[in-house]
Length: 287
Image (cartoon, rainbow, N blue to C red; front, side, top):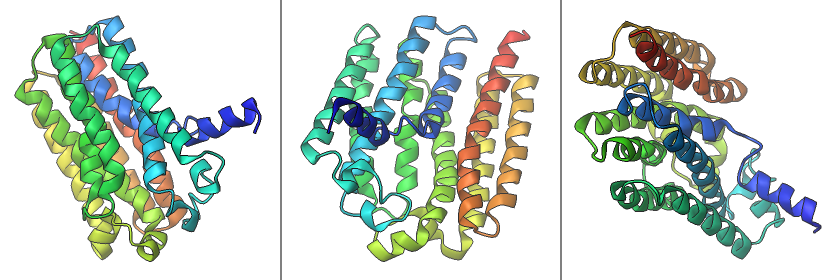
């Protein structure tokens, strides 16, 4: 395999050609950075966290495919992934994941020591999540913690502490992740049943749509409580109202359980995260 082909395989392994995961990881981190920074977060810290988001999501994708390398070939949507096809070897994949994680760790070294301590928990969560699909009934909840751990780290980077509000925001992210990743899991439900992987879509069964909408409702309720505790004002709640409208739109997409429409709903969660962020930015900008 020549260099260009190798880089292309790495790009697909890290899912850089599919940035939705980066966006879903970035939005809650940006929420926390803006609020903990009083609407004026350090540009240097934002840069570190955004680059770190790309690196850690990429590393997480590599570990995920390593963990699922014996399953992906049996799933229509994942059968052409580089590890499943043999384009990338297992040792090569592990070295790539380690290199990405190391680079992400080097990035945070200038930050407060609490951020560095929290990064070890973040690394453990990212590395262990793919294996939870073997035994957790709702591994999406674990994903929500992993995808939201940038929240306490963002607070630690700017306030040198992690207040209760940060953990509340993390809880909101957990329910959001269960909502959007259940939509994602609804796409692969039949394949996952065949190969024995556990997902929330399988656990919720015929109540999957109701569970997704309940998780959206809890997410928005927790975000509203978070806004109250952090002293956020009208523009923030306008953002939440828009996010609620987006959640209702997702119901129209998933209610018939059509695979393509469920996947479309999953992808559309980018706009829900953006709506919340826009509300936060507008709140501080208009003060």
